[in-house]
Length: 310
Image (cartoon, rainbow, N blue to C red; front, side):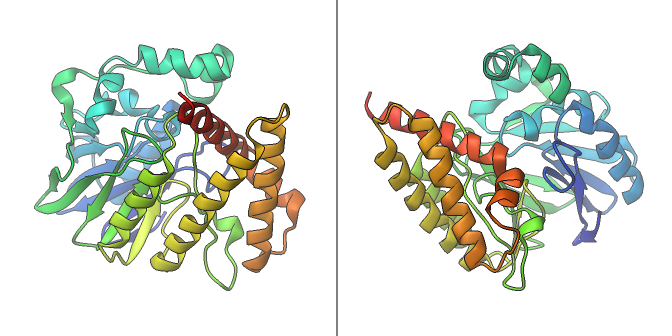
């Protein structure tokens, strides 16, 4: 965990090392978390406070980019240990933090109760009076440091990104894609979009990426994983791949083996781009690292295809 402008990157421990990040911002003895991982991440979140020299009572905010469980599953348990903090979330996500039963039921329908308990732990409700709904442009003040919340749909309709004007960086959740450090080469970071179900919207995602780039940030902090620079190149890579993924989805639509065909074509797309980026690990190693993301991207594209016909 390192600090730059008081920004601490926390490995939440979800799935594998350097897969899922949360962030701690420290300003004049006060703290704000951005995302929090799962319930199992709680010791790491509290440990980050200790490393930064803060007590739980010095945390003013927990800001969620969105309420998918790898970002927000541990919010209730963490908030229960932060006596002075308030939770900041998109208006569409607030009700799921106050009463997470539908969020739990929806995810359990996909993954099963046993997997949910193992991977995430039970979701703890957050009192409504501690929840702040962040409309587009809402500014969170951290000891005088403005953190602006921007409505950034495309990955999810309840997604915000946070522009830290002081550091001139954005905390992007999943809207600025996935960039795992295992794929870094001499050309810099490798990136790919995430379309996980059920609210992928390619046009909205293009627009959200452009909105963030227009701020001219020095760096982005995606949840998966850590600080990345060379923002304009990465944005271009995302735009190209979003269009390619949409093209793949349309080409496989109507096939009886649509899901399998999508998985194969997406793996080919990412493997080819990683090789062109100078990554020498090969297709099989790439698939091992990205198998969960490729599966979720395929599902997200399929839900989008089916919705476009309604």
